Length: 345
Ligand SMILES: NC(=O)c1ccc[n+]([C@@H]2O[C@H](COP(=O)([O-])OP(=O)(O)OC[C@H]3O[C@@H](n4cnc5c(N)ncnc54)[C@H](OP(=O)(O)O)[C@@H]3O)[C@@H](O)[C@H]2O)c1
Image 1: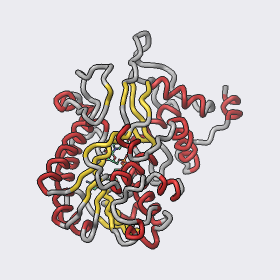
Image 2: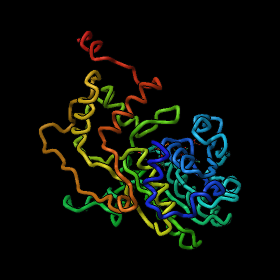
Image 3: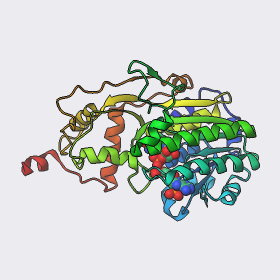
Image 4: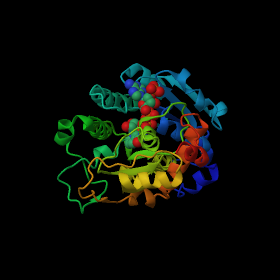
């Protein structure tokens, strides 16, 4: 991603002049994670002074290697459940990007997501922060068994909290939905400007040293570690688009409320076909757990609000290609050539 591209996407509607960005300090919670790292990179390329929070900043050395980091990035220790640490992190900040949240199926994540978000909003208001960008999830949007298959998924849709709570695997969706509602309530109570980015399954090259949950989603099919795939559809976005979306909604004065960040909605079978075409040398999962039944159809969706701000979505094929090449380069995937694979047959 070049800084030129980043600037072009700005749509000319700045939250402050470009020259003043050098003086503007913004804080990113969960700076060292998959999405957090790309948001930090995008902000540095656009000239901001960035303060990144982590529970253990020593694990975030990869951020210090980013362009502009030496001059304009500082890392500080903060936990979203430790209010004092958040107040210290937000001191002197104009904006906060609240990205930190556990990504897991552990029910203990619910209080961390919800109370962590409440703490972030309270600390931001206390410290005079003006604008907050909150990272939600499409798990807060699409998990509703009563939604018509013909309905267009957009910012007005909400998941069904009772359905999410009933299904153990959907506890993450419940936590994100409740955290988003908490962010919205606290913002209006405390007169904070809030914009919410709603990413879906996010893929693309990683900057951090370890493989995060959503990239693992692709790896387990590529390597055949998943014996079967479900008869299900999912929405995908490129991590660089998700990062740009965060900065676009921050920089556009009038941006408020939710922004759905979805590039593509496809059936898992289609995703795996794409992977097999791109990397035929890997034993990509090929068996559906629901063979013989009718395949679920992809639903319609709208990403118009972000496109109106100037975001252009990366094709999924390109995101997957660059994600896998990056994981190979970083040693997370064996580099298997087509010739080696044939020799094993
Ligand atoms: N990737 C996706 O497909 C996707 C889709 C939709 C929404 N999201 C949302 O995007 C955000 C980032 O996700 P990701 O995919 O980048 O995951 P990730 O790489 O696992 O990053 C999660 C981040 O949250 C931080 N965190 C977790 N618990 C924390 C706590 N108690 N206090 C402070 N920080 C804490 C972690 O910080 P440490 O470095 O301290 O561990 C880490 O930096 C999350 O809010 C997630 O819900 C992700």
